Image 1 (cartoon, protein in one colour):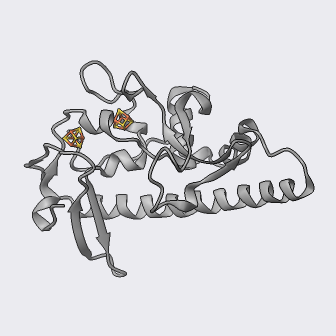
Image 2 (cartoon, rainbow, N blue to C red):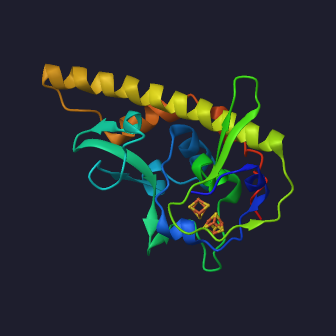
Image 3 (cartoon, rainbow, N blue to C red):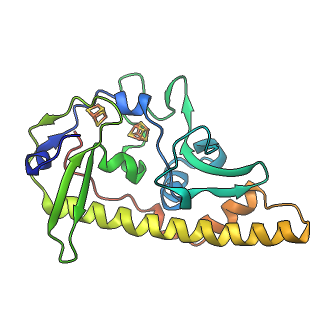
Length: 203
Ligand code: SF4
Ligand code: SF4
C-alpha cells in the first residue's frame, strides 16, 4: 500500500479497471443523486449482496435488514463491469457517481483542525495512476468531510430501518419491502439532486 504526501498528485488515467474489478458500495445519499441524475428506479441502479458475497468487515453498519436477510447495497454491474462504464471506459454518470468512486484510489485522513494526517492509495487492484495532478488540499478535505458525513447519515438511516424491521419480526409481521425502504430513505433528500463538485485526481 503506497503512502506519502506525493500521492496528493495522483491523477486517474481513466483505464476503467476499478470500474470492472471492484464493487462500489452505495449510500442512500449516493442513491438519491443517482435517481435524480438518471430518472431510473433505485432497484435498477443497485443490487444487494449478502455478507458472504462481499467483504463487509469494515462496514457492518451498512447491512440493511430485508426479507432475505442482511444485505449491502452495491452499484449494479452488467457484463462484468459497473453498468455505467461505457465502451470507451468512461463513466456515463460522472457528475453523480458515488462518493466511493470520487475518492478512489486515494484514502485521506485529516486531523481535528483540518490538517492532513495520512494519505494512502487503496490497492484493491493494481491502479495505474500517474503523479501529475495539481495538489488541491481544499478539495481533498472537502471530499473527505462530505464522505464522512454521508456515511454517518447512511449508517444512522440503516440502523433506524433495521430497528423497525426487528420490531416487526418480534411481532411476527412481514419485513418491509424495498419500495418501503426507498420511500423512507429517499423522500427527505431533495438537495441530493444537485451535482457535487469534482475531485482533483479525476481526468
Ligand atoms: S482510479 Fe486507477 S484503476 Fe481506476 S480508472 Fe483510474 S487509473 Fe484506472
Ligand atoms: S459509477 Fe462511474 S466511476 Fe463509479 S464504478 Fe461506475 S463507471 Fe466507474
